[in-house]
Length: 103
Length: 260
Image 1 (spheres, chains in turn blue, purple):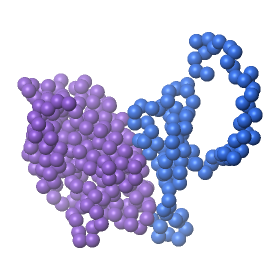
Image 2 (tube, rainbow over the protein chains, first blue to last red):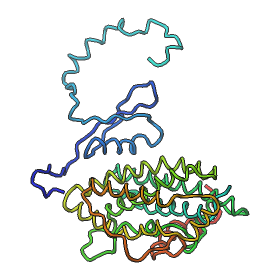
Image 3 (tube, each protein chain N blue to C red):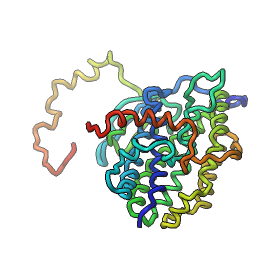
Image 4 (cartoon, rainbow over the protein chains, first blue to last red):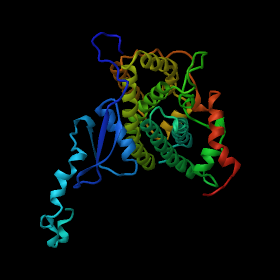
Protein backbone atom coordinates (compact mmCIF):
# COMPACT_ATOMS: atom_id res chain seq x y z
CA UNK A 1 0.00 0.00 0.00
CA UNK A 2 1.12 3.56 -0.53
CA UNK A 3 0.16 4.82 2.89
CA UNK A 4 3.62 4.57 4.47
CA UNK A 5 5.68 7.69 3.83
CA UNK A 6 8.85 6.02 2.53
CA UNK A 7 7.12 3.65 0.08
CA UNK A 8 7.85 4.08 -3.61
CA UNK A 9 4.95 5.76 -5.41
CA UNK A 10 2.70 3.40 -7.34
CA UNK A 11 3.54 3.29 -11.05
CA UNK A 12 0.86 4.72 -13.29
CA UNK A 13 2.78 3.90 -16.47
CA UNK A 14 4.50 0.54 -16.64
CA UNK A 15 7.99 0.52 -18.15
CA UNK A 16 8.64 -1.08 -21.52
CA UNK A 17 10.55 -4.40 -21.82
CA UNK A 18 12.15 -5.98 -24.86
CA UNK A 19 11.52 -9.71 -25.19
CA UNK A 20 14.08 -12.21 -26.56
CA UNK A 21 13.12 -15.84 -27.14
CA UNK A 22 15.39 -18.85 -27.80
CA UNK A 23 13.44 -21.15 -30.07
CA UNK A 24 15.51 -24.26 -29.27
CA UNK A 25 18.62 -25.32 -27.42
CA UNK A 26 21.76 -24.33 -29.30
CA UNK A 27 20.21 -21.38 -31.09
CA UNK A 28 20.57 -17.79 -29.96
CA UNK A 29 17.89 -15.67 -28.29
CA UNK A 30 16.13 -13.54 -30.89
CA UNK A 31 14.27 -10.32 -30.36
CA UNK A 32 10.57 -10.97 -30.89
CA UNK A 33 8.77 -7.91 -29.52
CA UNK A 34 8.16 -5.74 -26.51
CA UNK A 35 5.57 -5.30 -23.77
CA UNK A 36 4.71 -3.17 -20.76
CA UNK A 37 5.06 -4.70 -17.29
CA UNK A 38 5.45 -3.46 -13.74
CA UNK A 39 8.65 -5.40 -13.02
CA UNK A 40 11.02 -7.98 -14.47
CA UNK A 41 9.25 -11.02 -12.99
CA UNK A 42 5.93 -9.89 -14.39
CA UNK A 43 7.50 -9.09 -17.76
CA UNK A 44 8.77 -12.68 -17.92
CA UNK A 45 5.33 -14.14 -17.12
CA UNK A 46 3.63 -11.90 -19.66
CA UNK A 47 6.24 -12.68 -22.30
CA UNK A 48 5.52 -16.38 -21.75
CA UNK A 49 1.82 -15.81 -22.36
CA UNK A 50 2.19 -13.46 -25.30
CA UNK A 51 5.18 -14.84 -27.23
CA UNK A 52 5.48 -18.58 -26.45
CA UNK A 53 1.89 -19.83 -26.75
CA UNK A 54 2.66 -21.82 -29.87
CA UNK A 55 5.78 -23.56 -28.55
CA UNK A 56 8.03 -20.84 -29.93
CA UNK A 57 10.52 -21.04 -27.12
CA UNK A 58 12.60 -22.88 -24.54
CA UNK A 59 14.04 -19.78 -22.88
CA UNK A 60 13.06 -16.14 -22.50
CA UNK A 61 15.05 -12.98 -21.72
CA UNK A 62 13.44 -9.67 -20.86
CA UNK A 63 15.47 -6.46 -20.88
CA UNK A 64 14.34 -2.97 -19.86
CA UNK A 65 14.01 -1.02 -23.09
CA UNK A 66 15.76 1.98 -21.48
CA UNK A 67 18.89 -0.18 -21.03
CA UNK A 68 19.31 -0.44 -24.79
CA UNK A 69 21.48 2.13 -26.52
CA UNK A 70 20.47 2.30 -30.16
CA UNK A 71 22.28 3.69 -33.18
CA UNK A 72 20.81 6.81 -34.70
CA UNK A 73 19.07 6.25 -38.07
CA UNK A 74 20.70 9.48 -39.32
CA UNK A 75 24.12 7.84 -38.93
CA UNK A 76 23.15 5.04 -41.29
CA UNK A 77 25.36 6.27 -44.09
CA UNK A 78 28.48 6.66 -42.00
CA UNK A 79 27.99 3.43 -40.05
CA UNK A 80 26.84 0.95 -42.66
CA UNK A 81 27.40 2.13 -46.20
CA UNK A 82 31.24 1.68 -46.16
CA UNK A 83 30.71 -2.10 -45.86
CA UNK A 84 28.71 -2.24 -49.07
CA UNK A 85 31.63 -2.64 -51.50
CA UNK A 86 33.62 -5.16 -49.46
CA UNK A 87 32.09 -8.42 -50.58
CA UNK A 88 35.34 -10.26 -49.75
CA UNK A 89 34.26 -10.05 -46.11
CA UNK A 90 31.37 -12.44 -46.73
CA UNK A 91 32.22 -16.13 -46.35
CA UNK A 92 30.40 -16.88 -49.60
CA UNK A 93 33.52 -18.23 -51.32
CA UNK A 94 33.57 -21.35 -49.13
CA UNK A 95 31.36 -24.45 -49.08
CA UNK A 96 30.12 -25.01 -45.53
CA UNK A 97 30.07 -28.72 -44.58
CA UNK A 98 26.65 -30.10 -43.57
CA UNK A 99 28.00 -31.17 -40.15
CA UNK A 100 28.65 -27.56 -39.15
CA UNK A 101 24.92 -26.99 -38.84
CA UNK A 102 23.76 -23.50 -37.89
CA UNK A 103 26.10 -20.68 -38.78
CA UNK B 1 -7.74 -49.94 -10.74
CA UNK B 2 -10.25 -47.30 -11.86
CA UNK B 3 -11.11 -43.93 -10.37
CA UNK B 4 -14.85 -43.81 -9.47
CA UNK B 5 -17.05 -41.91 -11.94
CA UNK B 6 -18.19 -39.25 -9.47
CA UNK B 7 -14.66 -38.28 -8.54
CA UNK B 8 -13.62 -38.00 -12.21
CA UNK B 9 -16.67 -35.82 -12.87
CA UNK B 10 -15.82 -33.67 -9.83
CA UNK B 11 -12.30 -32.99 -11.13
CA UNK B 12 -13.56 -32.44 -14.69
CA UNK B 13 -16.46 -30.17 -13.69
CA UNK B 14 -14.13 -28.05 -11.54
CA UNK B 15 -11.90 -27.51 -14.55
CA UNK B 16 -14.60 -26.86 -17.14
CA UNK B 17 -16.63 -24.48 -14.96
CA UNK B 18 -13.64 -22.33 -13.97
CA UNK B 19 -12.33 -22.49 -17.54
CA UNK B 20 -15.67 -21.24 -18.87
CA UNK B 21 -15.91 -18.56 -16.17
CA UNK B 22 -12.42 -17.18 -16.78
CA UNK B 23 -13.02 -17.18 -20.54
CA UNK B 24 -15.47 -14.32 -19.90
CA UNK B 25 -12.37 -12.09 -19.76
CA UNK B 26 -11.52 -12.93 -23.38
CA UNK B 27 -11.70 -9.59 -25.20
CA UNK B 28 -12.31 -7.74 -21.90
CA UNK B 29 -9.00 -8.17 -20.04
CA UNK B 30 -7.58 -5.14 -18.22
CA UNK B 31 -4.52 -5.27 -20.50
CA UNK B 32 -3.86 -7.43 -23.55
CA UNK B 33 -1.23 -9.57 -21.80
CA UNK B 34 -3.79 -10.53 -19.13
CA UNK B 35 -6.46 -11.13 -21.75
CA UNK B 36 -4.14 -13.69 -23.34
CA UNK B 37 -3.04 -15.12 -19.99
CA UNK B 38 -6.61 -15.79 -18.84
CA UNK B 39 -7.57 -17.33 -22.18
CA UNK B 40 -4.43 -19.52 -22.06
CA UNK B 41 -5.37 -20.73 -18.60
CA UNK B 42 -8.96 -21.42 -19.65
CA UNK B 43 -7.63 -23.59 -22.47
CA UNK B 44 -5.42 -25.45 -19.97
CA UNK B 45 -8.46 -26.10 -17.77
CA UNK B 46 -10.70 -27.15 -20.65
CA UNK B 47 -7.92 -29.47 -21.82
CA UNK B 48 -7.83 -31.08 -18.37
CA UNK B 49 -11.62 -31.43 -18.42
CA UNK B 50 -11.52 -33.14 -21.82
CA UNK B 51 -9.10 -35.80 -20.59
CA UNK B 52 -11.11 -36.41 -17.42
CA UNK B 53 -14.48 -36.50 -19.24
CA UNK B 54 -13.02 -38.99 -21.73
CA UNK B 55 -12.04 -41.24 -18.82
CA UNK B 56 -15.52 -40.84 -17.34
CA UNK B 57 -17.15 -41.60 -20.69
CA UNK B 58 -15.17 -44.86 -20.91
CA UNK B 59 -16.55 -45.88 -17.50
CA UNK B 60 -20.12 -45.03 -18.51
CA UNK B 61 -19.82 -46.73 -21.89
CA UNK B 62 -22.55 -46.65 -24.53
CA UNK B 63 -22.90 -43.35 -26.35
CA UNK B 64 -21.24 -41.26 -23.63
CA UNK B 65 -18.47 -38.93 -24.83
CA UNK B 66 -16.65 -35.92 -23.41
CA UNK B 67 -19.22 -33.76 -25.23
CA UNK B 68 -22.31 -35.46 -23.79
CA UNK B 69 -20.84 -35.01 -20.32
CA UNK B 70 -19.95 -31.34 -20.80
CA UNK B 71 -22.98 -30.25 -22.80
CA UNK B 72 -25.91 -32.50 -21.96
CA UNK B 73 -25.91 -32.61 -18.18
CA UNK B 74 -27.84 -30.10 -16.06
CA UNK B 75 -27.05 -28.13 -12.90
CA UNK B 76 -27.74 -30.89 -10.31
CA UNK B 77 -25.48 -33.29 -12.26
CA UNK B 78 -22.43 -31.01 -11.97
CA UNK B 79 -19.97 -31.86 -9.18
CA UNK B 80 -17.81 -28.70 -9.11
CA UNK B 81 -17.06 -26.63 -6.02
CA UNK B 82 -19.49 -23.71 -5.72
CA UNK B 83 -16.48 -21.34 -5.48
CA UNK B 84 -15.71 -21.93 -9.16
CA UNK B 85 -19.11 -21.01 -10.60
CA UNK B 86 -19.43 -17.61 -8.86
CA UNK B 87 -19.34 -14.49 -11.06
CA UNK B 88 -16.24 -12.27 -11.11
CA UNK B 89 -17.57 -10.10 -8.28
CA UNK B 90 -19.24 -10.21 -4.89
CA UNK B 91 -22.86 -9.12 -4.51
CA UNK B 92 -23.39 -5.97 -6.59
CA UNK B 93 -23.90 -2.78 -4.65
CA UNK B 94 -25.13 0.59 -5.85
CA UNK B 95 -21.69 2.10 -6.20
CA UNK B 96 -20.14 -0.88 -8.01
CA UNK B 97 -18.16 0.39 -11.00
CA UNK B 98 -18.33 -2.82 -12.98
CA UNK B 99 -19.86 -6.26 -12.82
CA UNK B 100 -16.44 -7.86 -13.36
CA UNK B 101 -13.73 -7.31 -10.78
CA UNK B 102 -10.21 -8.50 -11.59
CA UNK B 103 -9.34 -8.81 -7.89
CA UNK B 104 -12.09 -11.41 -7.50
CA UNK B 105 -10.82 -13.32 -10.53
CA UNK B 106 -7.26 -13.32 -9.20
CA UNK B 107 -8.25 -14.24 -5.63
CA UNK B 108 -10.36 -17.19 -6.83
CA UNK B 109 -7.68 -18.45 -9.22
CA UNK B 110 -5.18 -18.24 -6.40
CA UNK B 111 -7.34 -20.11 -3.85
CA UNK B 112 -8.13 -22.85 -6.39
CA UNK B 113 -4.64 -23.30 -7.87
CA UNK B 114 -3.16 -23.38 -4.34
CA UNK B 115 -5.41 -26.41 -3.81
CA UNK B 116 -4.75 -28.06 -7.16
CA UNK B 117 -0.94 -27.91 -7.09
CA UNK B 118 -0.65 -30.11 -3.98
CA UNK B 119 -3.68 -32.20 -5.01
CA UNK B 120 -2.34 -33.01 -8.50
CA UNK B 121 1.02 -33.78 -6.82
CA UNK B 122 -0.72 -36.40 -4.68
CA UNK B 123 -2.81 -37.76 -7.57
CA UNK B 124 0.35 -38.09 -9.67
CA UNK B 125 1.16 -41.03 -7.35
CA UNK B 126 -2.31 -42.50 -7.87
CA UNK B 127 -2.76 -46.23 -8.44
CA UNK B 128 -4.94 -45.40 -11.47
CA UNK B 129 -2.28 -44.97 -14.17
CA UNK B 130 -4.53 -42.85 -16.41
CA UNK B 131 -5.44 -40.49 -13.58
CA UNK B 132 -1.75 -40.28 -12.60
CA UNK B 133 -0.86 -39.28 -16.17
CA UNK B 134 -3.57 -36.59 -16.27
CA UNK B 135 -2.36 -35.34 -12.88
CA UNK B 136 1.25 -35.10 -14.11
CA UNK B 137 0.19 -32.99 -17.09
CA UNK B 138 -2.20 -30.85 -15.04
CA UNK B 139 0.36 -30.22 -12.31
CA UNK B 140 2.57 -28.26 -14.71
CA UNK B 141 -0.38 -26.13 -15.79
CA UNK B 142 -1.65 -25.59 -12.23
CA UNK B 143 1.85 -24.56 -11.12
CA UNK B 144 1.83 -21.80 -13.71
CA UNK B 145 -1.72 -20.74 -12.74
CA UNK B 146 -0.55 -20.50 -9.13
CA UNK B 147 2.47 -18.42 -10.09
CA UNK B 148 0.35 -16.07 -12.19
CA UNK B 149 -2.40 -15.55 -9.61
CA UNK B 150 0.03 -15.29 -6.69
CA UNK B 151 2.06 -12.61 -8.48
CA UNK B 152 -1.06 -10.58 -9.10
CA UNK B 153 -2.41 -11.14 -5.60
CA UNK B 154 0.80 -9.65 -4.20
CA UNK B 155 0.77 -6.78 -6.73
CA UNK B 156 -2.86 -5.88 -5.98
CA UNK B 157 -2.58 -6.39 -2.21
CA UNK B 158 0.69 -4.48 -1.94
CA UNK B 159 -0.35 -1.95 -4.59
CA UNK B 160 -2.52 1.13 -4.22
CA UNK B 161 -5.11 1.80 -1.51
CA UNK B 162 -7.87 0.96 -3.98
CA UNK B 163 -6.32 -2.27 -5.28
CA UNK B 164 -5.61 -3.37 -1.70
CA UNK B 165 -9.18 -2.67 -0.58
CA UNK B 166 -10.73 -4.41 -3.58
CA UNK B 167 -8.66 -7.59 -3.39
CA UNK B 168 -9.20 -7.75 0.39
CA UNK B 169 -12.95 -7.51 -0.23
CA UNK B 170 -12.68 -10.28 -2.82
CA UNK B 171 -10.97 -12.52 -0.27
CA UNK B 172 -13.63 -11.78 2.36
CA UNK B 173 -16.24 -12.79 -0.20
CA UNK B 174 -14.54 -15.96 -1.44
CA UNK B 175 -12.83 -17.45 1.60
CA UNK B 176 -15.99 -18.99 3.17
CA UNK B 177 -16.52 -21.01 -0.03
CA UNK B 178 -13.17 -22.77 0.52
CA UNK B 179 -14.68 -24.66 3.46
CA UNK B 180 -16.15 -26.96 0.85
CA UNK B 181 -12.61 -28.20 0.06
CA UNK B 182 -12.32 -29.78 3.49
CA UNK B 183 -15.67 -31.42 4.17
CA UNK B 184 -15.86 -35.11 3.34
CA UNK B 185 -18.81 -36.13 1.18
CA UNK B 186 -19.80 -39.56 -0.13
CA UNK B 187 -17.83 -38.73 -3.27
CA UNK B 188 -14.44 -38.48 -1.50
CA UNK B 189 -15.23 -41.56 0.63
CA UNK B 190 -16.09 -43.58 -2.46
CA UNK B 191 -12.83 -42.49 -4.09
CA UNK B 192 -10.82 -43.46 -1.00
CA UNK B 193 -12.49 -46.89 -0.83
CA UNK B 194 -11.65 -47.42 -4.51
CA UNK B 195 -7.97 -46.73 -3.79
CA UNK B 196 -7.69 -43.02 -4.70
CA UNK B 197 -6.04 -42.22 -1.40
CA UNK B 198 -5.70 -38.50 -0.66
CA UNK B 199 -3.91 -37.35 2.48
CA UNK B 200 -6.43 -34.62 3.38
CA UNK B 201 -4.64 -33.30 6.51
CA UNK B 202 -1.43 -32.93 4.46
CA UNK B 203 -3.34 -31.28 1.61
CA UNK B 204 -4.97 -28.80 3.98
CA UNK B 205 -1.61 -28.02 5.62
CA UNK B 206 -0.02 -27.45 2.18
CA UNK B 207 -2.89 -25.19 1.11
CA UNK B 208 -2.76 -23.19 4.34
CA UNK B 209 0.98 -22.70 3.97
CA UNK B 210 0.62 -21.42 0.38
CA UNK B 211 -2.27 -19.12 1.32
CA UNK B 212 -0.67 -17.69 4.46
CA UNK B 213 2.68 -17.00 2.78
CA UNK B 214 1.06 -15.26 -0.18
CA UNK B 215 -1.27 -13.16 2.00
CA UNK B 216 1.68 -12.06 4.13
CA UNK B 217 3.62 -10.99 1.01
CA UNK B 218 0.50 -9.22 -0.25
CA UNK B 219 -0.05 -7.37 3.08
CA UNK B 220 -3.58 -8.84 3.14
CA UNK B 221 -5.48 -10.15 6.14
CA UNK B 222 -6.71 -13.72 6.07
CA UNK B 223 -10.50 -13.58 6.53
CA UNK B 224 -12.23 -16.16 8.67
CA UNK B 225 -13.87 -18.94 6.71
CA UNK B 226 -16.84 -19.76 8.87
CA UNK B 227 -20.54 -19.86 8.14
CA UNK B 228 -22.59 -21.76 5.60
CA UNK B 229 -20.68 -24.56 3.87
CA UNK B 230 -21.56 -24.78 0.18
CA UNK B 231 -22.14 -28.18 -1.42
CA UNK B 232 -21.64 -27.72 -5.13
CA UNK B 233 -19.62 -30.94 -5.24
CA UNK B 234 -22.72 -32.99 -4.38
CA UNK B 235 -24.87 -31.09 -6.91
CA UNK B 236 -26.41 -28.34 -4.73
CA UNK B 237 -25.32 -25.22 -6.58
CA UNK B 238 -25.70 -21.46 -6.37
CA UNK B 239 -28.05 -19.62 -8.76
CA UNK B 240 -25.06 -18.73 -10.95
CA UNK B 241 -24.24 -22.13 -12.44
CA UNK B 242 -27.43 -22.37 -14.51
CA UNK B 243 -26.62 -19.17 -16.41
CA UNK B 244 -23.04 -20.29 -17.00
CA UNK B 245 -24.16 -23.67 -18.35
CA UNK B 246 -26.87 -22.09 -20.50
CA UNK B 247 -24.24 -20.04 -22.28
CA UNK B 248 -21.72 -22.88 -22.50
CA UNK B 249 -24.21 -25.51 -23.67
CA UNK B 250 -26.54 -23.53 -25.93
CA UNK B 251 -24.66 -24.15 -29.18
CA UNK B 252 -24.25 -27.89 -28.63
CA UNK B 253 -27.94 -28.22 -27.68
CA UNK B 254 -29.17 -26.12 -30.63
CA UNK B 255 -27.18 -28.31 -33.04
CA UNK B 256 -26.83 -31.72 -31.36
CA UNK B 257 -24.19 -33.90 -32.97
CA UNK B 258 -22.88 -31.02 -35.13
CA UNK B 259 -19.38 -31.52 -36.52
CA UNK B 260 -16.89 -28.90 -37.59
